Length: 116
Image 1 (cartoon, rainbow, N blue to C red):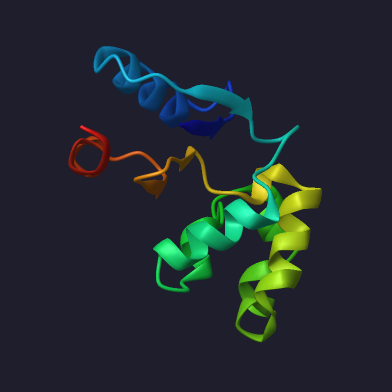
Image 2: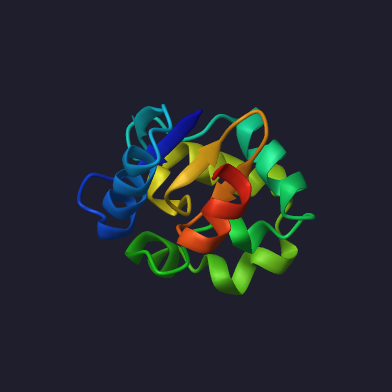
């Protein structure tokens, strides 16, 4: 399992604590320096039935400053992926890629259902 996180993000830290408490092994990657690959973003988009908003960190300063909210409906997924590759802060975190589960954000009940 790969999990992309930001060290200063309390939600990411809680997710890592949850994984540790369940003895689930993972590879932790810094989301800003090494954002998910385009292939991983495509898999996640498919897991969320094409809802690209589920992949975006809509509360980030970068998201607001770039005005993505107002442009998103007219953007192609590939263009959004390019932005996410250039700026890992745009990716919703934590971002989990596993052979059996793909999850953005951390909600313990959802994680228990998918990873537990």
